[in-house]
Length: 122
Image (tube, rainbow, N blue to C red; front, side, top):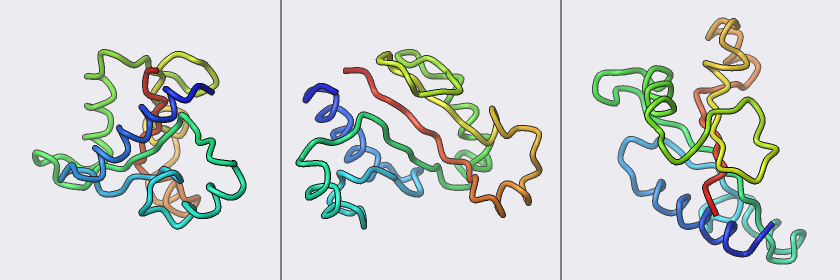
C-alpha cells in the first residue's frame, strides 16, 4: 500500500463526507470514524486504500439502491468488480451485484445495505 493511495483515499473520503446525497462514509482513517483512534494505534499510521459509502434515499427521486446502481454504471475511472483485491481502481455495489438475488428484507437482516465500496485510483 503506497502512501499516495492512502492519502488519495482519505481525500476522497473527506470529500464524500460533505456531499449532501451521501448518507455515510465508512473509512476508519476519517477523524469522524469511531475506529479512528484504533487505526492510529494498531496500524501504525498506515491506512487502507478501500472506503465505503452509502447514498441517501431520494437522490433525484431514486432510492439509495437505484442511485447506487446508477452511480456505479456511470463511473469512468473505476472498474466494476465483485472483489476489491487488485491494485487497480475498483468499485462494487454488493446489493445489486453479489447479493442481487437476496430480498431487501433479508439483506437488511444480514447487514447488507446499499453501501458502495471503492478503492480509488492512486
